[in-house]
Length: 187
Image 1 (tube, rainbow, N blue to C red):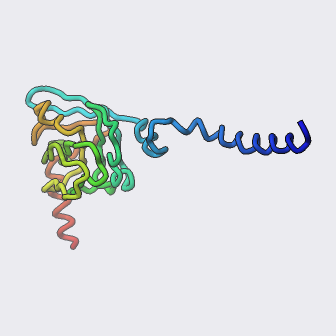
Image 2: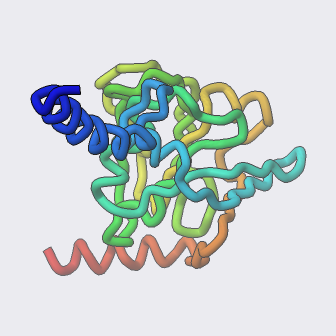
Image 3: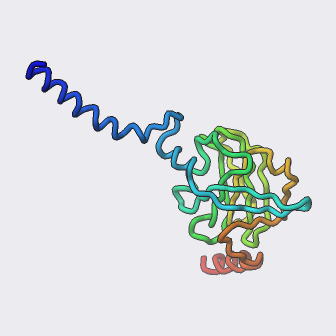
């Protein structure tokens, strides 16, 4: 090899080595780095007690405002007994009426709105993918659980069923009314 060929080879090697360092981050699964890390996010156990028994799920959590704004957008890898728990909702922790939509969400979801006492206030079943129509809780809620569309009906989950999860702090139903009254008094 001539001196010129050695320099070209060294230059090419200098370009290739940094690229090799980046390759382990490429998974080849079509997900972006953010989506990949979300797909591998830690999960917690959620249990719903309905008239026909206990139903257990392993779900991701969305605690911060940014996590809650993104939710399950762009996701197609939601497991049958998986989903996402938005708790506390909103991140400030004071229950309020929730409004969700399905923008950029390709998978139909059951959106379960949960009161501060852990009871289900409303279930929006099989929501329409990519829809920007608002989906309201209809009352103040302290958490929201998103499951794969159709699971609620399939399992017999209904309004007023009880939801529990790791780390949930039980609050009596009248705590919401007291919080709402205090907020109204301060306005």
